Length: 157
Image (cartoon, rainbow, N blue to C red; front, side, top):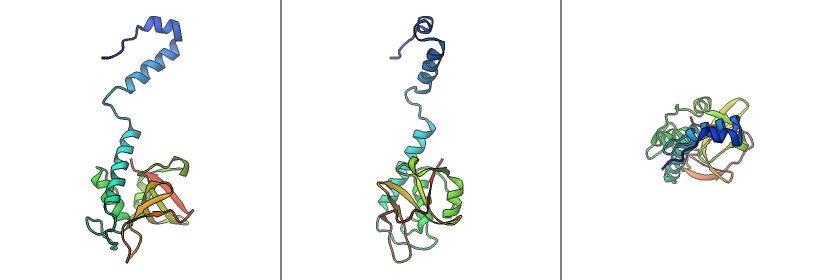
């Protein structure tokens, strides 16, 4: 059941600008429609769950799953399973994402570790200052605290 609004009486009560804002907002929030931000969050949440499901998978340079991963292979695999395509390397992934401030980061965003202008590692933000990542040779996919201040954040579009 949808609410019907008698526009002339609404204009009289709240003013033309307010009624127009109400009409536009109401049409944008129709049930079943998803905003770009909500869609990005859904993909990111799914990618985060995929990465977490790979806990314990061994690191292998150049591997992109399903049983072994390097850092960017894990993010590539996780987002692919969530319906999003990413390039292969951490630097290429950084270049493709929408760059965001630390204060804007959300679970499922990518965390890029850098030295100067070069990105050398990537993980998926899990919240509470932690990431899911595939760290290095001899290690496994795991949840870890962000250990550096030299990080940038990116959101997959």
